[in-house]
Length: 138
Image 1 (cartoon, helix red, strand yellow):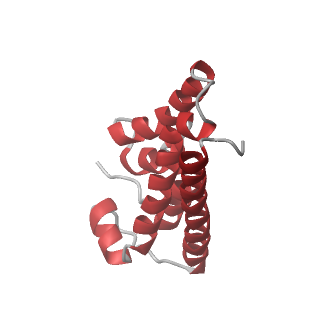
Image 2: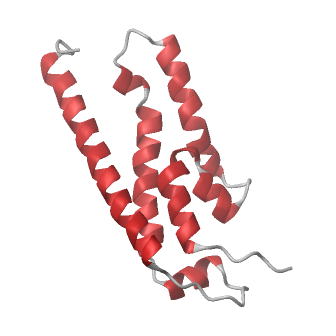
């Protein structure tokens, strides 16, 4: 049984853009991956918490999804920075094709780093603002 060749650029893009719902895990490992389903359920769980616990701060109720987002951005960096040889050894052991990274992957990695840094700084700043002001500023 031959497996389909998995593209490193596509996996990195999926992790960066749709990783918080587990798209990269579904692409790499299929529907039986437990971590993919954990990512996938983080958004509905966060929305349910936001609706049921509306008196809590929004950042707290959306924290499962925010954590999933930060993990997926970090995973995008790990996937994208893996060498082509290691990528093929891990995800394409039976494929006759060889992976070849291009400038598109580099652009995705730069944008992922920028978005991840912005998201992390926002979460930390908002968390400390809520901690020290008690949510007085909104």
